Image 1 (spheres, one colour):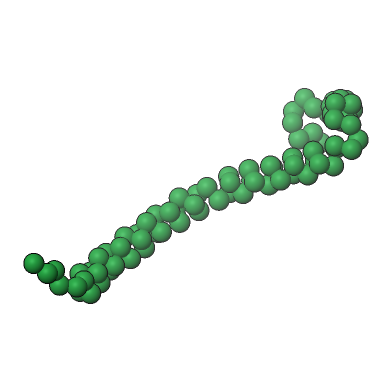
Image 2: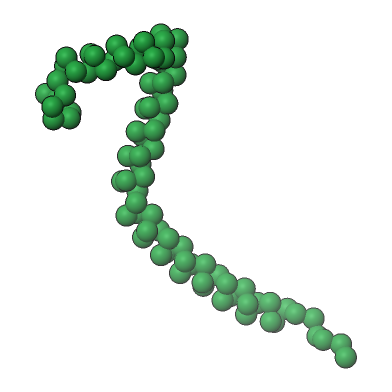
Length: 83
């Protein structure tokens, strides 16, 4: 079962050998770790995209309410202006 159409086990092995030759055996664990973090971040970004838009709307409404109450409070507690 190939993840990408047209790429079988033979092609993947060839790609891995080329990567090994380019980066060397010492860099492969770091490269794999970085690639894994990147894939995880992309997945979280794609999955959380719709939630983020909804959260932003809710946060904007909450901020508007807080700003409105802060404005009302500051008018009541403001010291009288001296002429």
